[in-house]
Length: 318
Ligand code: KMH
Ligand code: ZN
Image (cartoon, rainbow, N blue to C red; front, side, top):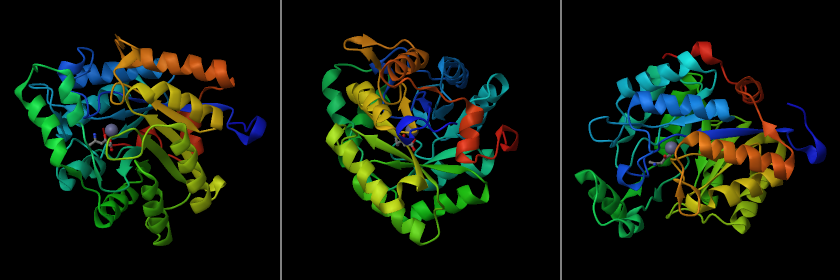
């Protein structure tokens, strides 16, 4: 990809986070649930401009987030059949799921890329409870409520174990940094030789328990990462949770971020008061906004593979 004016990439990596483990089915009828629906949404998001799809899966019986590797395999292989998009599998899984279950997708399915959560945080969804009087499934209320007393655990030992497993499988880690401290955690792991440069970092902003999704924090995260790793030693992308999705992504794109992420995992609304009917709608909107504001077009999956040094679609096990 050509380096354009101001040293920015001429293109931008768009990631679509298709279903996640934050929102529950009562919150939107458009949240994809089955592996077929997840794959279909991913393929359409790729057609709209996403080079990467970030994949969680859900139990088709009750829509609850799961780490069942057979469901992951079904979703991922359906995507692979129909699209060249890069499949990035979650190792965050769902809230309250043990680490052994979260990492299993890597040795079994050997994806090109997987998420790597860079520190333990409170991951609080319970304020969402106020918005709903009743729920479609009984687990939803309990799932949101338990986050008041939940630590999303990612100790150094856990992160090292995830990293080594990714290295063994030639899977590129996407470093999910929910707070500025997570950048310092990454720096320690670089010093220890556990993480290798160049890094691919995602600033995940606006999760209650992590840093807020505002511009001041974004600038601080970027400056801190520059100082710790050197501007040329990492690629970066941004997630803004909820209504901050578009303002934060567009700001990041204007700051020269290599990527931005949108999708129903992070935000259910296309605009105020209007639910997005698909991930593709969110991708179309960010593609248009980024182009109008910065003139940058979406990078293709092949361009992203080259930039990040990914092993290629033919080396996965799904
Ligand atoms: N919903 C979470 C448990 C990831 O994909 O790695 C955090 C998460 C991160 O979604
Ligand atoms: Zn995720």
